[in-house]
Image 1 (cartoon, rainbow, N blue to C red):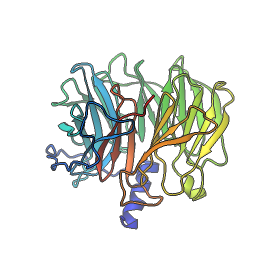
Image 2 (image 1 turned 120 degrees about the vertical axis):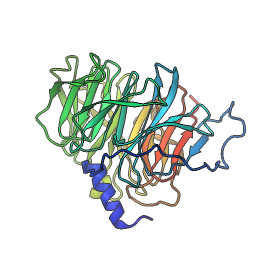
Image 3 (image 1 turned 90 degrees about the horizontal axis):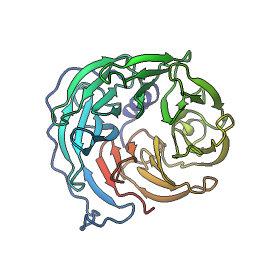
Image 4 (image 1 turned 135 degrees about the vertical axis):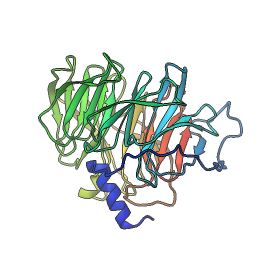
Length: 371
């Protein structure tokens, strides 16, 4: 168990973006050899549903995770944020072609890695705070990444296929990156402070605005968003993050700080958003052994990173009665409601594989559930 001072510092960073990271250059990191988990399938051509396919250790503590299909290389890469001993946070670029032995093919030191998103051949990364800039990284050649520009820093970011970059904290900002991906151009910003994270599906933006609730915007005109409803729930301590299903009938809302109000409180809430002017609560799920962080939804499944409890998959085909489908503790030596263990989940891979970044235990690659 990490000591209380370390946990307190990490909690403040995660919730309020108070990173004090330096940005000095460092040499690329040479990873240590990976132990091969005993549970890996001996036949990688026929993995079972929800099977652990691979695990890669790193020298440094990990942060968020994202993956993208490289247009230039026509293959998938994983981007993983890291802290290092010099406090110069950056990004690992990982090739997961061999899922049992994923390979680090590049590093980008000094760019944060607290939150990472992509658009085309470009990655966007922030430190978790507006005290430092965000960075635009050219990934046309993932083995030779190049920092090409900066933009105003923030706590979290989101990119859309239509070419928008959205940043959260302080406030909500919408940028155009379609016109020039190397130079985000501000289109609009709100009048609110705080905030935390964003999800966009089609013309609707879901602003998980921390203590202010979840605000749903119509962004048909991204330079003039229309706020159409706000989810306020007295049982939700902190509107941290969330995701919608493909047809936007269901929203899963994550409360990262539920334990502060009630140690046995609910961690995520499922809303019917068929009518986005009137979201209706359908169900909620709590786990008093860990803190929930992030979620992705694909098909009828919601994929969660649950800090000290690791990776969890819920079947939400009946949103009024979500059912746990699979769970894997990526950090078995960590227990309790602490900010350690599984940080990020990436469930959107074209391959169907699911990626988890565990702060101390590395990258975990799982096969998806049987559809």
